[in-house]
Length: 281
Ligand SMILES: CC(C)=CCC/C(C)=C/CC/C(C)=C/CC/C(C)=C/COC[C@H](O)COP(=O)(O)O
Ligand SMILES: CC(C)=CCC/C(C)=C/CC/C(C)=C/CC/C(C)=C/COP(=O)(O)OP(=O)(O)O
Ligand SMILES: [Mg+2]
Image 1 (cartoon, rainbow, N blue to C red):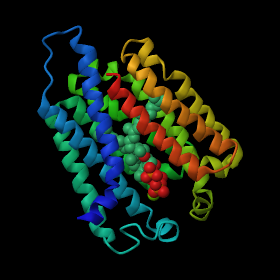
Image 2 (cartoon, rainbow, N blue to C red):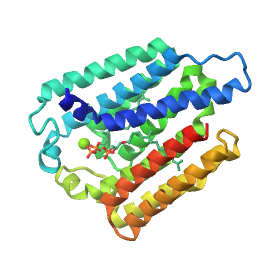
Image 3 (cartoon, helix red, strand yellow):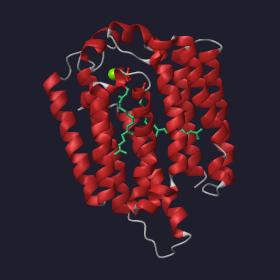
Image 4 (cartoon, rainbow, N blue to C red):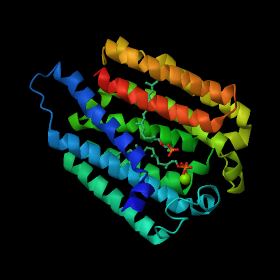
């Protein structure tokens, strides 16, 4: 059981699922001010959390299935290269998670079902090939991460999804920045694997500057949810702390050229940003 949770990267699944949960709450807050009779279903909200957890876990599991050769070198302690889980078991487990997540999403409503199906296709394409293409891999993970908010809002249909576009964009920008930093960190292993990532194509320095631009865009846009009255002033205080960590993360990659530390700081800033959303809701 523990090995399967490790294969799913349960920590990332929980973070993504929490984002979906926040998406439901914020969309409800926005829409209920105009429609007082709008109801918030605890069952649907729990389903959103579970679906994002399952589909994210499926994507992570399939990712490790396709990455077996790289991970034998770079990450030998992971469940598949270490022998805790066989390749075939990892594949069937991931497919089961995808099917379960998609089926549950259609149980919520057709919009959630379509998003879950579309995201599952992107996750499969990412694991198979997209991750080895310049920038498209980073953009895919950025979209997928940002889509957790859209997915939560979709519980209330298109109006709920549209209400969370700003949060979607913030999360997407920040994730793209981190993904490019991760590619800078993995440049040697990716070169051996024949991957054509941004740092391999244009060099680590230029790629780091592009990551910094995405990071700054996310930071500069972070007051927008407050300015649009989507989130309150408490959000501003907490997101300011996230922005400081984003700034330090950018300094780590540009000033110190320490991609590993920068990646960790980006993730910590993203966690703080998630907290700012719930505090400001
Ligand atoms: C400026 C501002 C307010 C930005 C918003 C930042 C935000 C809320 C981002 C969303 C965070 C989120 C929903 C994360 C979900 C889980 C996750 C970490 C997804 C991306 O992971 C892919 C990554 O390649 C996994 O690598 P690793 O973390 O090293 O295992
Ligand atoms: C909203 C719904 C239904 C699903 C969203 C699914 C989500 C949130 C995905 C988040 C992004 C994510 C976890 C993508 C999976 C791909 C992945 C594991 C990328 C990182 O793997 P690599 O690029 O191989 O790098 P490492 O294996 O070294 O971490
Ligand atoms: Mg991988």
